[in-house]
Structures are given as C-alpha cells and as structure tokens.
Amino acid sequence: MTKIQKTWTTKKAIKIIICISFLLLISCEDETSKASKELKLQNENLTVSDLNESDLIGKSFILYNMFPDYNISMSFYNSNNQVFGWAGVNTYRTSYTKNNGEVKFSGIARTRMSGPRDIMEAENNFVRYLEDAKYMFLQDNDLVIITSDTTVLKFRENIIDTNELNGKKFRLSNMFEGTEITLSIENNSFIGNSGVNIYNIPFELNNNEITIGQHGISTLMAGPENDMKAEDEYLKFLNLAKYISFDNYNLCIKTADNQILLFDLTE
Image (cartoon, rainbow, N blue to C red):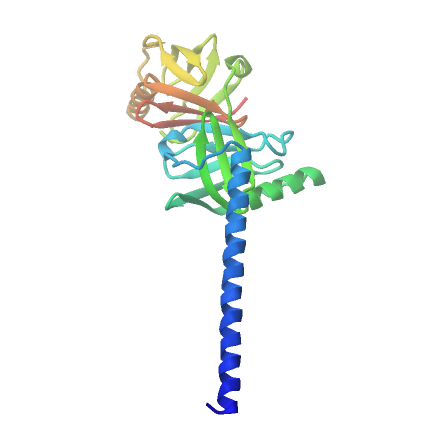
C-alpha cells in the first residue's frame, strides 16, 4: 500500500469514527431526554392512556394548574372532535385528530378582543401549548394535555351547582331552527317554552349526572305543524337527559345516546 493510499484510508477511518461518535451522542441525548420526560410525568403521577372521544362529549373543563385566575376552558359540545372554549380574553374554537395515540389540534381560531397584557400573554401561551399538544386523556375527573416538551396542562371538570343557574335563561341553538325553544332551571326542574307549549320536567343532579324522576307536565296547546314536530322531538330528547355542563356561555345537555342539546345564554 502506498503512502497516499494509507493517508486516504486513515482519513476514511477517522470520518467513520466521527460519524459513529456523532450517532452515539445523538442516541445518548435522545435516551437522556426520554428519561427526563418520563421522570417528569412520574413526578406528576401521570401515565399516558388512550382517549375515548365519547367520554368527552358534552363536558366542559377549566384549566387549573396554570393561569388559574383567567377561567381558561375547553368544552366538547359535539361528536366531530370540535372544541370550544374561553382562552382568557377571547373565545376560541378548534378541532383535534388522533393518530397512533397522539393528538393534534388544528385550525385554532379566536375572536379578536384585546385585554390586559398579562391576560393576553396567558392566552397566547395557552394557544401555543394547544398547538404543541401531543397527548390528551382523562385521568379521574381531570382532562390532561401533554405537549411535545412534556408541559402538562390539567383541566378540572366543571361541576354545576344548580343554584348558580337559577334565574338564567337559555335558548336552544343547535337544532330545530325557526322554532323558539327555551330552558331555565328552577327548583331542580327544567322549565321553558318547547315551541308551542310550556313544560316542566323535574330532575335530580349528582356531579353533572342527570336522573329524570318522572315525565314532566306540559300545557296542551296546538300550534303550527313544524313547531309541534320540533316540540315532540325536543321533549323526547330532554326526557332522555343524562349529563349537563355549563361554561358560563353555553349550557349543554347530553342524552343517554350522546345526542346534544346546546343552549345559548340569553339572560
């Protein structure tokens, strides 16, 4: 072997050693990072679990482990993985997809109100966390979101106190367009206008779980055919109510078969 060939072989060997060392370094960094993330989750007493989307439908959650003074919320009010909520100053909406156990939020849209600087900063940070979300799951009554850098967002299920709803009036917004249907809660009863008639349906509530004690009463007036059909369907859904949530803007009632009645706050 000539001197030139020996020199070329030596340089080649050095390059190979450098490449191997670099790959080993990256591997070590990855393992260190993975171990650090696993330790962080252990310190939070978290184990990533699978998400059943149907368990979220009809529920509303309040962020409590960061920005606790701003009532940042996430609400799941339909079956198409849509999310609505309050971000601090603005309302927002987005949707999420799941792939191999990981979650991704996309198309985060906000209203364009401005507010105090500290609240706006909190809102912007919250939106960035959503954009960087990697996992979402339920643990007990908490909704947990973990970002790619293992930042943990914990949301507590918003449990209703019916006393807080006394005097508030709502209008059905997600079905039977053209028929005016309203709802209020008084003395553990749903009352309102079902399109043509006035209704009163008693219920019991325990941790947002609804039990309809008996079929309620209704006046017996007749009206336009479309309104009467809407009224019959609405009362059928309401008598199947199983879960209720409220996010300070919308009241959501979920039936036993995951039908959603969504109401806007009017008073």
